[in-house]
Image (cartoon, one colour):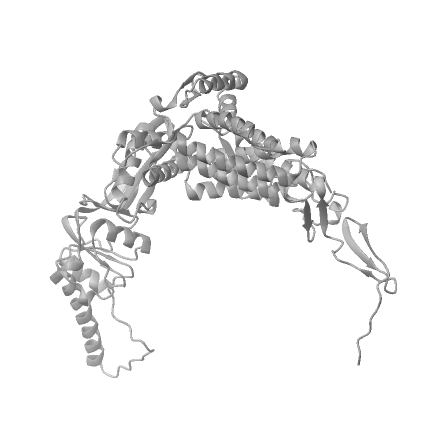
Length: 585
């Protein structure tokens, strides 16, 4: 049967209840493209809404930048409190819902995963790029032109940064400690940054090998009690476990260490079995065989020369008895991460069968002991020659202090790692941003067309870093920026803002330096996020995105939820809806 052809005489688009309907004149039946619950914003309204969302995220963390930055108190729905000025931590805890705002959050997350520091810088640069773009869009500069100009400027900025970079060697401990200290400045660890930076550099240098540097091999243990200055580096591993039997020794000196991937228990059969005992002698024979098996396992460890045993699984009570009689310290049910760290630190080879263990499988440590730290008993594996896995014990007066110190230490570990990998640093204190702004303005003169305006806007954007540093320190941002420009015009590439005094000083001489990759990554990720947001000219959201209650009482609320930042930390209020940030719906 041939198909039936229905001519479509006329198609038109109609807006109804903020939804898009396409009407086809086929018996007067409308063809609904989007549901009535769908929301759509297009053109300048969409751009304005997304830009506003991105700027709001940047403003949320802007006051935390620099050594005089302020902290944020974040309270979640369960009442848990986090006090921090770490950019990525703040943005994660804020539970942001607006899709464009989440793109800016991704900038911070990318910065954190790649280099571990500079998250706040990356976010405020992205926000300022959007702010500058908003003014140019109002002047009828097309978003594609802005995107092209921004990308050109970002590439030039990275090239200029490479030219400015200062070489640093892996043996230059003094400069590495300065880099670690710079990453801690302005955070809770700043009061003890000299002590902590030394510990961080020693830790990273210890775990470095021919395969590179994996900071996961630096385990951070938090202990509430004492002061931050009481923090210490253990050349070895701390295990949050205790010996399995009270009759075992508390410590073993000059210890040979065995790692068992399984448990020290009676071997189970591969299939389900049932033993029928009809005579008491049979029961005793069965128990004797179990005891014999466990004795053989214990004897295998003794013959290999083990003084300490760490098992991934359980240790049978009878096996504990035999091991204790031989004076062996045993620990059971370790996490796989701890097993790997012990193996890396002591040189031990994990075995899957205790019967097959030999002296060559054993690792070595000068001391293995159960000690009290902060009111908890833990196993310390110390005095390891050339340990490739170490432990940082962080102390502080309260849990919030220790948590913030941990975040600062994590940043420092990453920046030292990046510096050792790249061997290049740049001055801090807003020096590179001021120099880049100067060079990009000169570069803009060589760029033809309207892209020149975008490059100049990019140059203006970078100065948000020294300007914010001055604002957060209580200094006049205009005076500070004028002084910085004057110094850089005179060829002083390392001149940056001293947040404590407000004067312009040579950051390289003061030892305030940062890894090159922190700056290049911040510029790259901020630019990509800003360009992506600017190129969006249509936002189509399926379903109701009010992000809150769906009660009938909310029927009169504008699509997209309430505008502004009124919702506090729980989703940034109106950012939950597509229309909330600009009322564009």
